[in-house]
Length: 614
Ligand code: F6R
Image 1 (cartoon, helix red, strand yellow):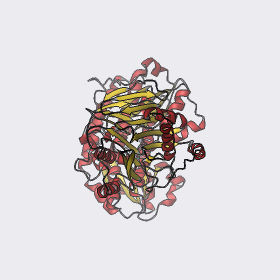
Image 2 (cartoon, helix red, strand yellow; image 1 turned 60 degrees about the vertical axis):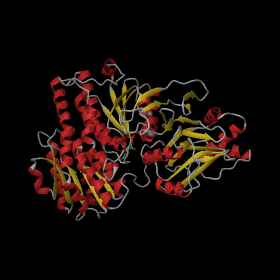
Image 3 (tube, rainbow, N blue to C red; image 1 turned 90 degrees about the vertical axis):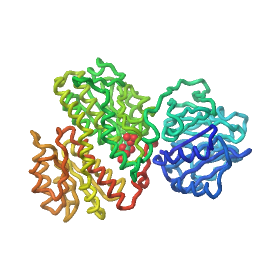
Image 4 (cartoon, rainbow, N blue to C red; image 1 turned 60 degrees about the horizontal axis):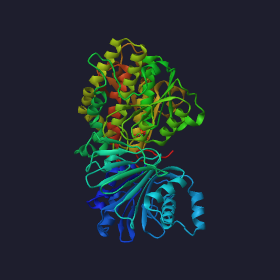
């Protein structure tokens, strides 16, 4: 949440920072602002609303030319999203400016201390407290890096802070605890940002920062210390995607582009993970096979869409490995005294790698002695760094706030993990594992087929554009797909949508069914699956009560015809893998319906990507 950029170099800092903010706008769009040195003081421009409002302000009143600058795009926590609460905030004398992502939890105590020194904030934000403290430290004679370290030692909570001091030009200082920050290393210029998208057009060389570190950038150097001032170890890395991946590529929305990216993203997630005989090697696994044989329980923790990927994973992992597997919302996990220990494998799933609830769950699990494996899409992020092992999903940057390719690639990574555990623990024959891998390899083409035949789904979105409520039903792995379909519709189209386990309907939710209510139903493949027939009965029950049924069923399944008002066909696939295909029409439906309603699909109201507060 919140996007932060800092720059020192030979270009116009204002241009670099505002462009960087544009690429980070998905992290929050309540307000945006920028500060550059201007003589003895900083010049600040900030405005409530999206970056286009800041653009308009800068067009009217440009900031002075400078090679140093900082900027911020906000997802409000403390204080309403207005001009005053927008970042940057300044010290009392206006010589330095600061931007912040996170929550300073002890801000009230610090505010009272500042008041005794006659320093009173003008905004309602916790951030301004940090700006005033920094100013105080500088007034006492500290240079900017030292002052930043001193302030960080006083702050509690989660924060990334970036600051510039007009009287120490040519440097930007940043610090992080529990919130993301990466350094971009350029040629005669350097950057700090919440993620690499902010500077990807200038450099693909990045440095991952650790917990409780302070970084000072100048045009020619990067220096990293801990909060005590001791030099710190950092990990440089090369970003394996480029600017084109962070642009819309001709689509109206990032989300639509990312839906269409899915075949390639799935192929990349599978790339290099198995040999020609279907034998898996997950090379980022830093847990030994001997340790994996000793695991007696798996606990999956994640939030939102990633949690639904975890629900699918539970079915697959238990089926293939016979290891008991729980799946839990990360925000609930550590608050209920869960039973985890050295023989528990905690699997976390996170597209961003920065979700605070998930990160806190990891820390709790590790304190209990559990081993943690992260399934993550973002290299350089905190969750993989704090885990014992990582499976990267290689989906490329996901910029639309609603997760799409993140989810599909998480499913594939979960399948790979389940199959790998089955291989290591000998719970499935090699041929069985190889057969599933072959099927996984067919998924990119099958998803492409779904995308090529999407007109029917777009027509459905036109038909239901005025619907006030939509239900989604599924059973077995179709249940998390139903939940995901409902979440996509809620967050993008702002209409009431619920996902239910089809078998649960008659235990209550069937009371919601009324004439014409659109109900999507995910029908499992036929084969030997008993649940197929059960789901058909569930469709019959709701249709008899007037529901308009949109049935997602495999090609050739003519048993559904009698009960389906509309049938969306899915390529044939085995039950456990069907979520990869069944999710695609639901993503397209939500994207199209929200577009028809005139909503901003990439930046839905009240939301932000990368939820870095608990
Ligand atoms: C919904 C969505 C969110 C995220 C959730 C977890 O479309 O994107 O529900 O899935 O906030 O985020 P990550 O996966 O980054 O931990």
